[in-house]
Amino acid sequence: MFTGENSAAEASQVKLTVTAKAGVADEVVALTLAHPDGRRLPDWTPGSHVDVVLMVKKKPL
Image 1 (cartoon, rainbow, N blue to C red):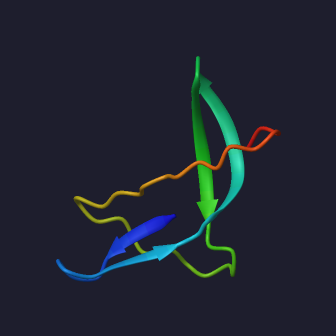
Image 2 (image 1 turned 30 degrees about the vertical axis):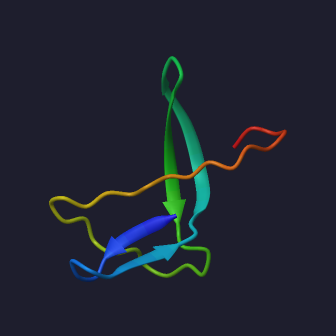
Image 3 (image 1 turned 60 degrees about the vertical axis):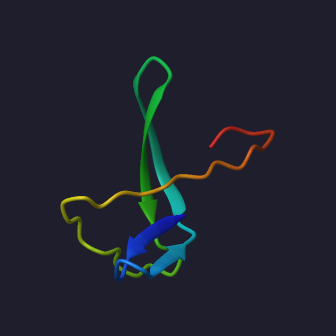
């Protein structure tokens, strides 16, 4: 989920789709995320972050 800060007291959450996965080192992957509706994600700003919640499934991402 993407958590974007709209204000200090308000946060929004969006479930994103993994569109690409690349192995970059042992046990490290880079994920490309996109909005499921194709909408543009907010621009990066200092202090921005994305909380990633992984759902355990029987197949790899």
